[in-house]
Image 1: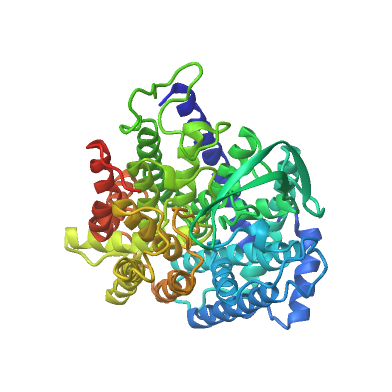
Image 2: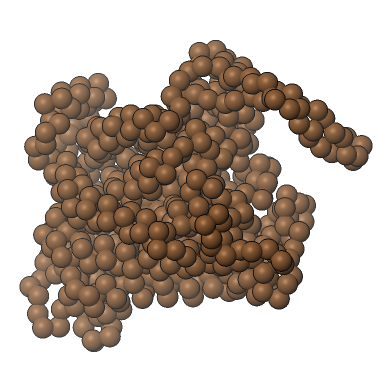
Length: 593
């Protein structure tokens, strides 16, 4: 670890902290229907959309109606994306490479992935998806899934803020305003900024370059023998990257235009573009903490939630940065210390232009949020560094989290926290003047149980099924377990990153990961909205001496502790058999290939 590395981490957090208040207050005005500086341009477009779709923006919805509208919209867009993938060979427009239709299992997995904001990619994008599919099928879904998450978070916040009401707002209005007023304007500016740094934006066919020296590539033939092939040219993929990169990061989607994702120089060419991408992941989630405080009438509560997220973020980046800065004990006779000409530590799977500090920081941020974009390969991290990325998702990705999803996930933890606090003082739990009853806690526990059931259940089946789950592993032993566990964790958490040594483009993984992604998104939304509907219908009781305050450091500490305990108790046994065991064996000089 170096002073320069910590300085860069401090600059990043300073930007997030500085942007949280203006971003949060702006989003509060957008969702409360108050006037903003974009209204003269966007209000006529909004009204036209409502008129064309037959939506009455003045009609509000109960939580069941809100949930139904969200599910129907998600189903319709899922089927649309699946159709685009299956028919991309028919649409000659923007398919200069003449890619064939995407295989059915893979197309279904990808459509589910982008609908759920996961962006899990079990394929090489630049060798599979046409420009038309990338833009019309995938980039549009990046907007839709992000806007859906934001709308759901706002619905939960309204449930907290309202009293004796049966409605949570109008899903179609929240979806439209989140897209038009927040995501689109930011992405236009952001995409241009990325282009200024060298991110590619064109519609050209791929270029072919002649190599100065021929390269010999060894592959395994059909007879199992090694075959050497001389290669004299290289295909240089390109396309409309910057426009997709902007919403990929801002909407915490994470699906890359290229297989290397943000490690690719056409997606993330400079240290400045890298800082912009990390900052954009936390921009909206950080702002939503301020939006929470503004809309519920307790700004201190919003900052207390922000503080809890910040503590968890710092713990993760500290551990990951330390772990990746350590020398690999299996490399004997190699100087792995920081020097004038060497970064030291574990540089495997990392880009030299980013180094250890920015790789560890990016990995922590992308798994704190449900983004999943990567500028280094998590599969090559040291065991404890890889464990941080796993543990971040295991916590529910509520450390700022995905746009909207992180906020409503953290608010479910808040419900559990005030319930436990009420038990500790022997009083009926209250949250901002509203009594938390058995129904609220039951829905919260259902929310928490769905997550581990699918992760641990499918991981166990995959580990015990050589013909299904372990046949495509690149490593055996504890690291192989970590690869499988990470895949289902990433799917359930709607993250999308991977320990890429696992080949997930099989019928088993395409099918089960799709099921896990759907469960991790939609099965968890239902109990969350049920809690929001319950809170909206309640009266507000005046605060008393026994009321647990939710706007101070004690609340922040208790909330942080509850998040860690719930995550640790649930997944610690699996982590012990995976990265922790791998760390101990590595220190003892044992590795697995």
